[in-house]
Each structure stands twice: as structure tokens, then as C-alpha cells.
Amino acid sequence: MREAIIAPVNYCSSCGEPVSKQVPPGDDRERFVCSACATIHYENPKIVTCCVPVFEDRVLLCRRAIEPRRGLWTLPGGFLETGETVFNGAARETWEEARARVDGDGLYTVFNLPHISQIYMFFRARVVGGRYGIGEETLETRLFREPEIPWDELAFPVISKTLAHYFRDRPSGVFPVRVEDIIIQGAVGTPPMPAGQDGGTRR
Image (cartoon, rainbow, N blue to C red):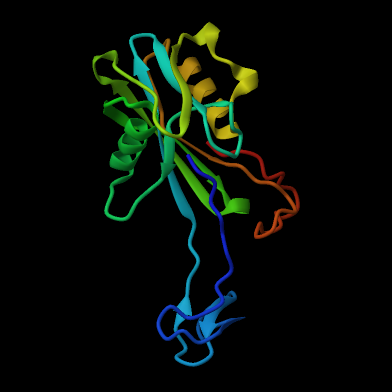
């Protein structure tokens, strides 16, 4: 799971001329528009697709070998590639980071992070044969039972939230899909919340 680097658009990908921010006709927000050919360059959120890989009563975690949060534990995941379904992307990332093949059990959690223009999608999955290893972006992989989870050493809030949901849901065997908004007020690109709303989570 790598950090997204969002760079400003300076030149048109169609003709190479400079672009400027303006509101195109019929639109309601600023876009990068080419000063020569009028091509509009849209910036859309990135999708990060991840697995909750399980073998028997344990969850497979990876200790990160890259920044950000190098040395902390995470669930395998990364940015969706062109031509992939969201689960295929999550399975690919699980192989790349943990050398584990997985069978999917469905979408589990979705997190909207508008302040960094990312959407995280986690899928429950079973580790085929209990086999796993260490990928190039990983220092260590390990299967954890619930009491062994290193809660204070998890890399990102979306990881902590997903694991907490999973262990709460597991006794009943019912795993509803959850959608949550993680809002950081004042972050660049985050619209102000209407009066009376605290920008918490949604389920």
C-alpha cells in the first residue's frame, strides 16, 4: 500500500499547452482547463482496495517496509489498477505484499477519505492453504489471533476500524457491509460541514 502523490496539472495531456484552473461552462467547480484546446482535465478520487485475509481463526497482517508508516502493521492492499475489478485488485495486492492466494467472501468495509481524495474498500477473504510469505514492500508477515493483534502498532485508522468490526462480527457469523466517512475538518479539499453535523462516521 503506497502513498498517493497528487501533483498539480501544469500542461495539457492532449496538446502540451499550459492549463489553468477555471469553472467550465455547465460545471459548478474549478477544473484544470487547457488554454489552447479547451480540454478539461478532471481529478478523481483514487480507489485503494484491500483484503482481510483469514486462515482458520487468525488474520494475516503485513509489517510495512515502505513509507509512510514503515515498520507498522497493515492489512494487504493498494491502488486499483486499470482493467481490474476491485476484488481482483485486492487479491493481487495480497499476493504482492504477503505472497498469499485468497478466495473472496465479499465486500466488508468502505471508507471515504475526502481530505486525501481516496476511497478504501476492504474484502473478507480466505488464505488458500494457509500459505503466505514476504513481498518486496513487506518486512514481515504473520497470522494473528484476536488477542495477539498489535493494536498500537497498526499503520492506519482504516486498518484498526476494519479489524475491530471483524472481531465484533465474527462470533455471530454475520458480516454486514459498512460504509464510513472519515472527515478531517480544515483539510485541503474538504468541504465545510453544515451546522449541527460533526463529520463523524456513517454506517
